[in-house]
Image (cartoon, rainbow, N blue to C red):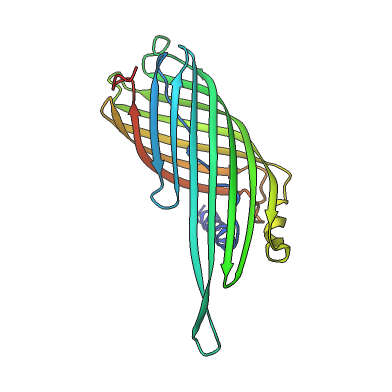
Length: 264
């Protein structure tokens, strides 16, 4: 067992090293939307971040006693710079890397209302996302880019619990989705050839994005914490794909119950 744990640890380190060496990023998962609707007319708004390079905001509305919808925006960014020196050790300039990702996420589905279950929550959403990625490397007068778009379509069941006083919630969410990249454009094929090979290694990617969610606070406003694991189901663990074989994140933020604030 100890040898097996050591092996898994070493494999994880290798994967992290491979991912960190990549010049381009194509997809940054957004947080799984988990409305935990209870009744017709429920309105919620939440905003989350990982306090580093990822953020999102989502709003949801219960259209009827069993039908709910949400829409959200997710963004990601990353900047880094590598200095270059001459044979004498003098700094002769920097190579700057910039990544920007944007995503519009929408969902429509069924939820178990409070009359059907007072504390246990169940939701099942059809989920779609439209996103883009922009990678730019600047080195002196050279400015090379690799940009493109993607579409993600999937289903997302949420199972959770909400206390009767509506002050504590926790849930498990699993999003099964398929991602297709499109409209790749680049300025320098020789520079980006390795990244384009990574992008095109699969025609499409199947993903499982699952999370554990915890909320606590007042009936009006709650603190939210979400721990997520992302698994590229058909990605190759021995190669660097556009969608990593495995990744994880922690997001935190606030959830506002608009009903409790009498917005309707």
